[in-house]
Structures are given as C-alpha cells and as structure tokens.
Image (cartoon, rainbow over all chains, first blue to last red; front, side, top):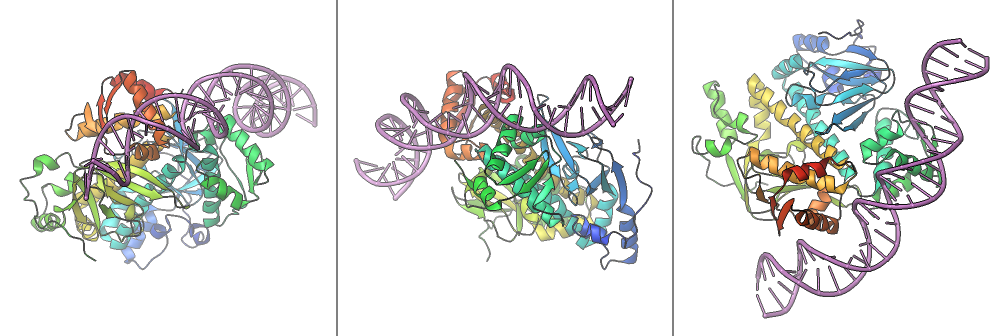
Amino acid sequence: MHLAFDDTVASSVAHIGRCSPCLLRDLCLPQKLPEEVARRLAALVRVRRTLRRSEVLFRPGDPLEHLYAVHAGTFKTVIMHPDGREQVADYLLPGELLGLSGIADGRHVSEAVALEDSQVCAVQYAELETVCGQVPILRHQLHRLIAGGIVREQKQVLRLGSTRGEARLASFLLDVSTRLAARGFSPQSFFLHLTRGEIGSFLGLKLETVSRMLSRMQAQNALRVRQREITILDAQRLRNMAMASI
Amino acid sequence: MHLAFDDTVASSVAHIGRCSPCLLRDLCLPQKLPEEVARRLAALVRVRRTLRRSEVLFRPGDPLEHLYAVHAGTFKTVIMHPDGREQVADYLLPGELLGLSGIADGRHVSEAVALEDSQVCAVQYAELETVCGQVPILRHQLHRLIAGGIVREQKQVLRLGSTRGEARLASFLLDVSTRLAARGFSPQSFFLHLTRGEIGSFLGLKLETVSRMLSRMQAQNALRVRQREITILDAQRLRNMAMASI
DNA sequence: CGATCTCTTGACACTGATCAAGATTGGTGG
DNA sequence: CCACCAATCTTGATCAGTGTCAAGAGATCG
C-alpha cells in the first residue's frame, strides 16, 4: 500500500529559507558530507505530501515507514485510552516532527490528523537509519531528534501536572506563541486550529471550561479571542496565570 | 569530576537472570556480534553504582555522560517549572532507564533521586553511540530505547489527561503493578516508595486528596494500604475507576 | 525518647463538570 | 445569493470533586 506523494521534489536551494527553522534541518540541509552520503540523504528527504483538512497522515498500528516534518499547516495527534476514549496528545506547528514515537516498535501509536490543508516533508526511516550508521554527525543528530521527542512530552507532563486549569491553558497559549516565534511567525496573534473540545482534551478540561476561561481572559484584557484567532495582549499576565499554583 | 562507581564489574554470566527483564538487555546481553564489538560493548555496560536513599544520581544541567538502568531499588525524577516549583515527573522501577531525555542536548534536564538504597548500571553514552555506528542491530535497538522514552511519557500524558483524579490514581497503581509484573515482581502487593505528596505531584493532586482517595479505595475493598505498602485486592474495580471519565 | 517528617481526617471554599438553552459560524444545495 | 443544516461556541444554573486550612495521630531517625 503506497500513499500518494507529491511528485515534485524540492530543489536543494529553493527551500532553505523556509526549512531553516525546521527540526529536520540538521538532517536535510547541506553539510560537509561525503559526496555519496549527501546524495543518499537528499534522496531520502524533501519528499512532500499534501493533506486536506481532517485528512489522516497515519493511524495507530500503521507500520513506520516515514518520519514527517510539518512543512505547512498544523496537525494534531490523538491517542486512544485502553477503554476507547480518545485524547488529543499533541498540536504540531510548521517545522515540528511527526511520527517519532513509532520508532519504539516500528508501528505508529497515535493518529495524526491535518487541522487545515497542510504539507509534510517525509523521510524514509529505515533508509535514514542506515545512512546515519555511516555518518557519525548524522547519527548524533538523529539521536538528538528522537530524544527531543521525550523532552517535548515531558513539557506536556509538566503542564498537565498543574492542578489549576487556568494555569494549564495559559501555559499552553504561551507555549504555542513561543514555538511560533521560533519558526518566524508572529507570537502575538495566531490561529489555534483546534476546537474548544480538542483544546480541552489536550489539557484535561471540558470544552465549556475552555470557552469560559478564554472569555474570562478576554474580559481581563489578557487576550483577544475571535473564533479561533488568539491575540496575546498581556503576556505577563498570562505568565502569572501559568504560575499560579493555587 | 568523576563519580564513584563500584569497582566490581559483574561477570557476563552471573547476572543474566536478573538482567533479562531489563530494558538494556538488548544492548547488554550476548548476541551474535563480531568479537571485537562484543568486547567493547561489554566494557561499556555493567558498571554499577550504588546510591543511598535520597542520594542524587544526576541533576539538571549535568553533562550527559552515562545512561542508567535501575538494577535494584527505585528512583524518582523531578523537573522544575520555569517559576521554580518542582514536579515529580517519573517513578522508576528495576529494569527501567534513566537519563534518556539528556540525549536531546547533551545535558540532563531532570534530577534523579534514589528513593531507597539502590543500584544502577551505567553505560557511557558517547562510546555507546560510537559502537552503535558499527553494528546496525545495536543502532536499531538504541533508537528503539530512546523512542521508548517518548512512549513512556505519552502514557503519563494520557493519564494526566483524565480530568478525574481518582482515575489518575487508579491508573497509576495499575501501571506500577503491571510494570512490576513485567520485571518478575508481585503485581499484587508492593511498596510505593513515594510520599503522598510525591504521588500527588506526579498526578496533579494535593497530598490530602491522595490520602483520602487511598483511604476510600481501601474502604471499598479495592486496596489494602499500610503506610507505603499497597495490596491490590480488586484490580477490576481499579480498572473501572481508571476508566470512569466521570 | 524527643524532634521531625509524614499521614489521616474534618470543615469549608472554590474550581470545574454537568445539564441545558441559545447564538454563531461554516458548509451545502436549491 | 439565499436558506437551511450541522457543527461549534457561549453562557447560565447547579452540583460534585478537590483544594485549603487546621488539628492531631503515626512513623522514623538520630
């Protein structure tokens, strides 16, 4: 079963600007590598795939064939509890990686869904592992990338460990803002392509609570909320909310 | 700065029984490997270190020199919020791994503390990375180990995503029970070497709430609680509690 | 055998879930 | 282009679950 990929393979030069904030850049971008390795690497990456809103990139149980970097758009990942309930486990922005957890046993464990029309860069994992065997620097980078996934999850564990719901929501908004800034987008004003229910699932809250909290933050002039567009008006106030341990 | 390690290096044969449920076993135990690789590998692992209760194995900021497997005893890891609050991030049983998240940028991000007198097996990470470059199977195993850390954290994210505190606690108790069983210990009766406050920190609850919930579960004959010794009397009932989304 | 840390339990306050009713938005077909 | 339908969001009233504060009972360790 082969998925449809865009047949255009981006040229090395054309996308450096856009790729430079990407977490795959240390694997993708030209480095001083042996000629042959560089060619194999180039063949591995830069394969694009386009997805429509709500289209699924991979599902639990799918064999791990590729790792993905979000090139444009946004994704959520969803994990299922043993009893069947679903939970939003992550919210991915351009430049961030999808599929790392599937390395653990060769099969994806979550479902990845595009939240808007999006593009991903795909890397064949088995091949990547082989090439990395030959190039110590790449090997090291790959380990860093995978371990970065642990750190990312740990941040969410930390966030969810706050007993106060408002702290979790404020922390999440600030996190998205920071990550957008790191990718060259505006940290002030952005779209959260998640429904209130999905935000709640991600943060251990009910959708009504998320809605109320956003309304309240707006009433306090910490945010401006228009549908799914968030404008951060008072980041310091949000930081205080994120800290409040009561 | 060199830490004190036990000078005894376990013989290959003596510990296979004890090592076989360990997550490092695929790196440690004899496989059909080239003679020289096997020797280098043997030199890497099986270095033991003994820690007293409340002794610190590594702290945030420490350079990553070793990965560790808990050989005996238990550990907690603690992460600090940006504002200085501390949170218990993990609870480690024999056979489980410590330090993986430090691979991401070469420095540990959490603090690892022995909760009782304990022993760890240490593996020099830089050397391990080198050896793995030469042996595809080991390389693959290492990737699986690191990615396993993502899956482990994801489970905790899932647990913390339950809005109901009782569900989080029940799920945690069942998880510890299952992991103990996988390591050859009794899943029925075990010591939780965490204070009520640490359990609460780990699960996003206050210590009084943890105490009350344990008392209530005992009153319902789902558990027997004696100080820190937990006996699971009705696992099915706990599973129901873990599911109840309310 | 104090001194200290940890745990349990009670009373009360407050956060967030639940249930319910509308309002708003977005998409689709006439 | 408009009308309608479905999905999403907002807001209110109420209640259950947890946090907070406080007091005292156990445990543990020099």
